[in-house]
Length: 226
Image 1 (spheres, rainbow, N blue to C red):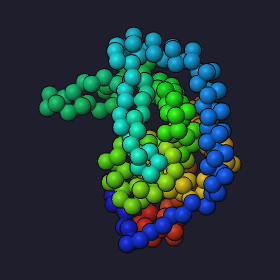
Image 2: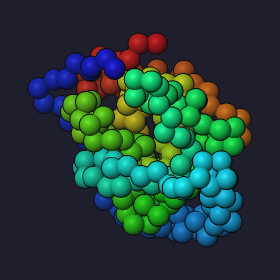
Image 3: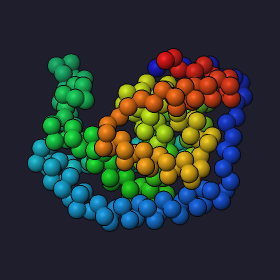
């Protein structure tokens, strides 16, 4: 991962009002609660698929960095085995999945348990995806600014390429979101998430370039290369 050039003091700022965050929290609870109830049969079916293909345990959990880098535990349905190479290192992700669990990941059914984290206030429906603390710390000041808002089940980077993006491109999109967060943008991301689930991931060059320019002009940071 390439390191950004960071000025001695850099401030992103949050243009949204306190009222936005309060209203967003209320909407998060309403939406997450509704989706959780509606998806209970789907989660039960996902659990059966995981049990039949991978066995127990059903869930994978890991400590992640939340808002203001406060650590919380994120849980998801397990989709990979612990298969390792002769030297003890884990095999690549695609070699540790089954056809069924790969489909679960493609449809993001494995992420559904994170609705509980939204209801508990550790996550939001929309925001930068939660990352391990060490990964966030590796971004330095930009990583800390990324944590100025709650992590989300989906985010601007996820609807603009996700796994097709580099880490630097993802953080550029995440920081653009942090600076421009509003309810309309959140609603747009939720709709684009549904579209992405149906059509698959694709890189949106215009949004990515906008994020690069934002970093360059607002933060004095080196934008990710195309």
